[in-house]
Every structure is written in structure tokens, then in C-alpha cells.
Length: 107
Image (cartoon, rainbow, N blue to C red; front, side, top):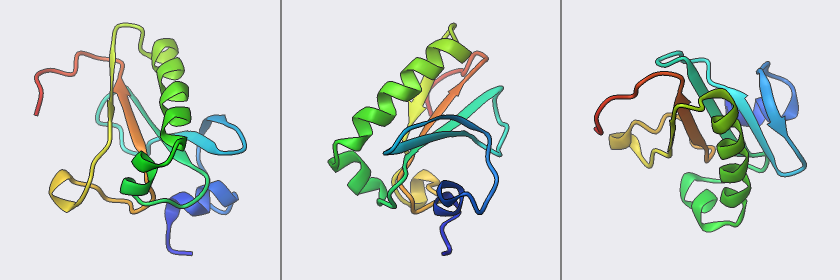
């Protein structure tokens, strides 16, 4: 199993879990570019495209909005990268929550 996110879901790789249910999991990102960096993903391995075409993205969105309101009440961003040019580093579909500070202008 090469996918680090699948390893986290299976419990063979450690992660700080902020939320999970039967279909999704939200973890802390190991990267610390801003104070709040969470990753929401399906427990089932889906590509980024499949994630957005499948109904599970709504479950991830709801969980991330709830956590964003809790951890970053001043505002936050939900971001999903598609492909190398957008700096997608994991093939397991996921959505980032960034917050905890002023995030500045758009890229």
C-alpha cells in the first residue's frame, strides 16, 4: 500500500484525527505553513476527480466547515489541488482547510 492516506485510514500510519465517521476522516496536515492546516478525505481511495464527482465531497465539506468555524472563526479557505501544476502531492482525493491567520491575496 503506497498511499500514505490509505495507511492513515487503516491505522498503520499515525495521524492526529479531528473527525471521522464511516465514510470520511479529517486529520492535521504534517505541513505547518499556517496555524490551522487540516485535510479531509474519504476513507475509500478515490482520485481527486472521483472525489468531486462522488457525493462524499459534501460530507467532507460539511465536516471541514464545522471544524473551520471552530478552529478559525476569523476565516479560512477550503482548497483542492488537481494535478502536478497545482501542486497536488497525493493521489488520494482530499480537501485542505487553511486558517488561523490572515491568508493574504489569492494565488
